[in-house]
Image 1 (spheres, rainbow, N blue to C red):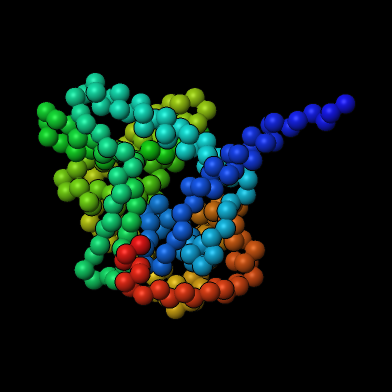
Image 2: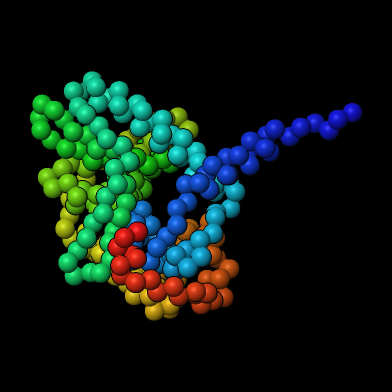
Length: 247
């Protein structure tokens, strides 16, 4: 008798492979709003040698991607009902005259309302127990606000909406975000610290490990072993500014 074909496991492998395609090369000198709020040591290891998350984390990430893609389509329907145009995954590059690096990212959705001549930048996040988290004040997350705030800097006068989607029951909860110059400068300062550590090839302090509120990051970090041993960065490519800014 032929052995039963394990289609479930094969499907899981396909999911992992598809999620890996979402991981793009990181280049010193180009920093991302979605990563900068994370532990600086984790980011240093990641820029030095990208490594995939464990499989169960990859599946969670892929689940979020599926929901995001589905809601991007639904938002187009919403746009029609409010007489608006919409763009998705809009690439943004944010520069500052004092810093020789760029902050680069993608705004999930940009609403352009035809009649009211207003712009709304939307960032979508997936999570669980949205209503419970909202009641306890766990959302909106500060680093999610920082991420959307960076995108808002590219659209002067635009409104921001941070929308959380419950992965279990698709409940949606939104929070308005107003652009803050202070938040943006803080992100640039954070990028500056990371840039200096990376170009010098030195290891940042273990932020998450030293902060009880962010210690949860260590549980899924692919570089937890290196961090515990305080291993130095393996490489120091130290790319030229030209290469960094052209990435």
